[in-house]
Image (cartoon, rainbow, N blue to C red):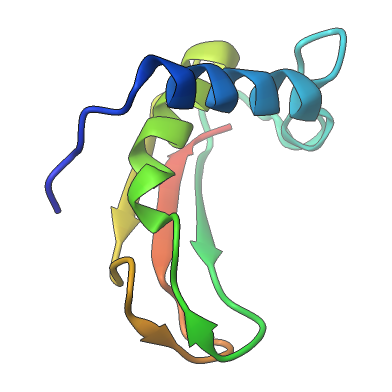
Length: 99
């Protein structure tokens, strides 16, 4: 998958969403509760309903921004692309990193 060059406005929107998600202290509560050092972790992005995927191309930019904020390396691997028809329960992407 090619990585697009996102506009400054798009990157600011990602940062604003991260601000809202992490809260005023800048820490992700769930990751903090799970933190055992550099334990490898994996998460799947799985739709709940049939639909057409949109926005998946932003995944790498979003996980890079979260990784910078959380001080961890996160990998985003898409197995679908924007415009694909997706089915419930079938993974469209995987996130890998340490928590």
